[in-house]
Image 1 (cartoon, one colour):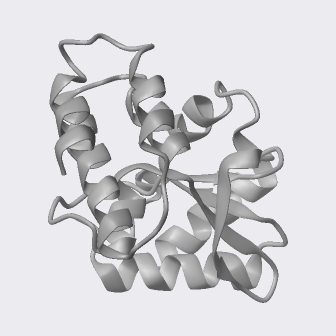
Image 2 (cartoon, one colour; image 1 turned 180 degrees about the horizontal axis):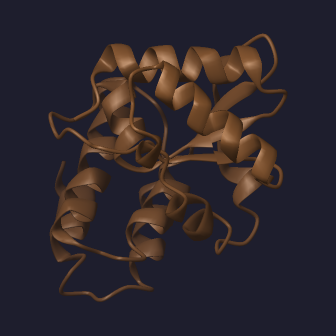
Length: 167
């Protein structure tokens, strides 16, 4: 499992050493926000531009220097993110570093990312991120969230729909 200190050290070094902007998604984001107790073994980080081999190798070197295995960098995150049209319009600035900035997805984008697989843990992650928004008094549009759910298996998203409507 990746500790809070490892996340922080890794991200600080990425933002200070690589001339690029990034987005962090998935369970990694929830761990950084302390929005869940679920731990994770990887870091879902994506370049806002193309992730070149040079950047990928630099990420792996930084991971290793931060005490993480290089396998902790999850290349699948980039695949899922880029399948969503206009995803860059749904980013929120999270941290600013010397050479780059780190963004997080909006609640709506997070739902779209997580509901592609729609596993039980994905649904729980959506609920955790929704709770984080509520706990931090961040605005979101229930109607938009419910509209996103319409595209997915209604049995699988039933718990999330109930949660949006009732809490």
